[in-house]
Image 1: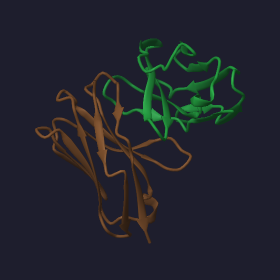
Image 2 (image 1 turned 120 degrees about the horizontal axis):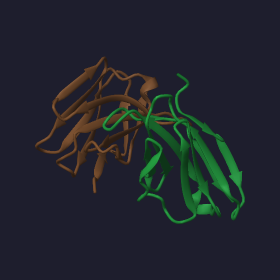
Image 3 (image 1 turned 45 degrees about the horizontal axis):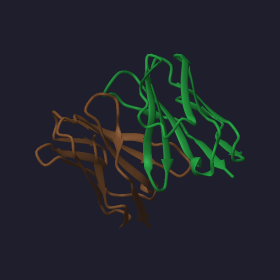
Length: 113
Length: 111
C-alpha cells in the first residue's frame, strides 16, 4: 500500500491567499484525521472524519479553516484567507475503526509570508 | 479533555545505552497508548503500542510499560543505535479515535 498521500509537500504563499491541502487516505480506512504541527503547540488535531462525515471539528482554529471529505478516498483542508501564523506542517492520517493504529502521511509544509 | 504530559523534552544517551521516555495521562478511561517516532522531514510513524489490558509489551529493542493505577506509561529503548535518533511522541485515547499527543522527546544517540 502506498500509505497516506498528501499534496503539496511544500507550499509557500502570500498572506491573504487561499491554500488547499489534499489527502488520499489508505484504501479501506474509514477514519481520516487532519493534524497541525508547530514548535509552540506540538501536534494538534484539527478535525476528523468517520465514513466521510465530520465527527469532531473542535480543533479547527477559526472560520478561515474548512475541511471536506467528498468521498472515502479524498479530503481537503482549506485555509482562506491564509495568515503568517498558519505556517506549520499539516498532517493527514487515517485508520480503520476506533482505537486502531493511525497512519500518518509525510505532511504538507506550509509557509505563509 | 485528555491531557498527556511527556518527559524529558530532550535526551542524549551514549550509543549502546538505554533510553527511557515517560508520559502521564489525565483520563482514567484511556485505553490505548501508542508511541510514534518522527524523523526529520517525515510524518510520525508508529513504533509500538499498548492497550489497557496489558502491563508491558516488547518488540526487539523497544518496550512499553503501562501503570494504569498511576496513569503513566513509558518507552524503553535498549542497546541504542544512531538510527534511533529522532523525536518520539507518546499518545493516549479512550477509544473514540481522538489521539492526544505528548509534546515530544528529542532523542540524540551519541556515537
